[in-house]
View 1: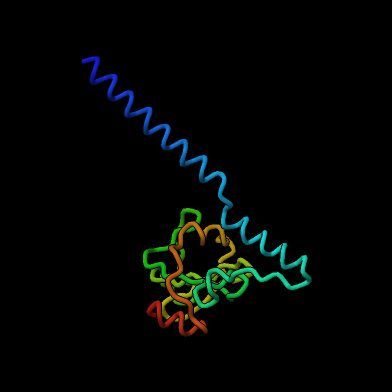
View 2: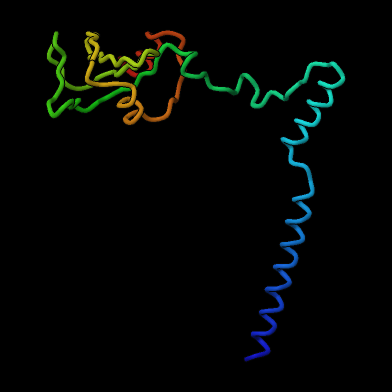
Length: 150
């Protein structure tokens, strides 16, 4: 029994030594970010403009919130705000909404018929809590509404 335990201890210590040697070797190597900085500072010292790699490429980047006019989502169930079911003031519809959140953090509700009203009790924080990830980008509001089935 003691021989098995001693052998297991030796194997464990050997793995520890190899791991420590690997960590020491990795600690001596420069990190990729440090390499880019060193190259940029070397080229800046030579009077040339520093070139930083463009990652990810521009065609793979998603637009930021400042680049879009707003975001929208479909809300199929009845919309309950402050404990009451919200209905369209014009036609009385109470479900199947398109919720729009504009760049200035205003929330607009659009019913199935097309009536649109600003809802001051909802804000961008509410929208962000209840919306899922963005799955499509549309050049116009009409394209987005068509994509969502309105």
